[in-house]
Length: 115
Length: 115
Image 1: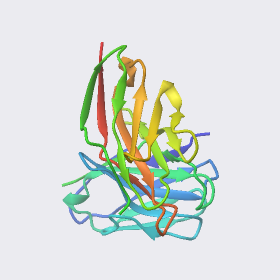
Image 2: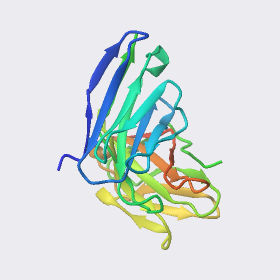
Image 3: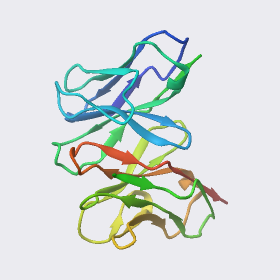
């Protein structure tokens, strides 16, 4: 049981390049999330998916797109990377339905630098 | 608006002394509150949560948190700090307005426990 896995662990991009961050969970969780972590700002929600086939915007969705490929996988795509997207990205998942009180499980993060 | 505040960027405490990491919240309706810990270069790990009931919540690694409705606070505590407790701590609140699936995180508090 690996929990939540993310690839890659590190990435350096040039401005304007695109890339996809991958996330997978093996806990059969319904909900999945993408956050970015910046110094002094905590975690900010980019997008989330309450269940397979649905996605919704969070606090800071501009410049990102997501795909909930199946129940296990939730990817985050940067179509045209900008230096402001330099950050650490975390994927998380959560058991249960929208109304449940379960906590989130986090992946190890992807450290992205955009030059 | 739903939010949490962690007023201290850093807390320093000597090993063996009690520690407190502060969190205040602002929510509509009943709050659902969480504490997470992040060790260097790792994802966040769940410590404990308050949903309802007893105001003193016990969690992992000897941590506990006290919910105070009148002061809108949810402070994290431990009776005797360990050097290994040194990490970044995040308070989080669940969005109860329109969507039960969103969580808002504080900016984080760095705990330094000195031998």
